[in-house]
Length: 214
Image (cartoon, rainbow, N blue to C red; front, top):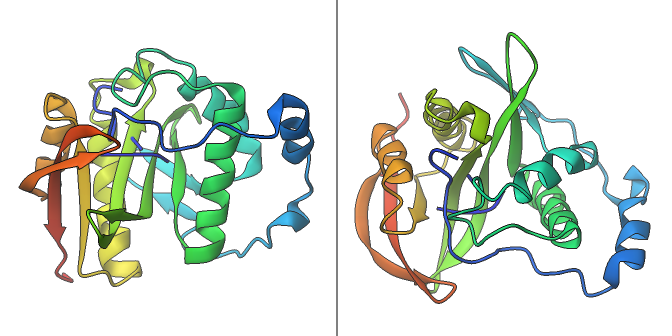
């Protein structure tokens, strides 16, 4: 699965989904300093999510350090196209901010409820897959939190958002065929394998989750 993503079970892998900043580091740094007026923030009921162990918050500019820490970790990025440069991390962050502004949903950053430690991120993103418009679930977990069910908890929360808050009929997720940990997460939260696809020049497996309101 991808962006944001997401690592005992990172979301997808293979190719990078943010482009390198064409402006170079100086211009990119200037962009990073833009005031929030560059994007008109809308406070919505989706800005904050809570689960049994986690608190999720809408991606914001101040999450750049988190973005860099995840993108520069070779373990986290092993099935996500490899580590990203600082400019690529900024571009990915900005893409997430713009996705929120356009769609009213996007990436969330999740923290442990008890300690406040950042444990990972998950996202609902629009994506075109083999000519069809989809909404994709992605997730990734900080390496220190692998093996604790974090990806499943984040993914389950976003399935609920997609169904109960956004009223979507279905969502998809995809990953590399050999990423068995991520595939298990998909299956735990109700996704079923649909077909093999090619994404960014690499073979992937596509899963789909039909959403029925409870």
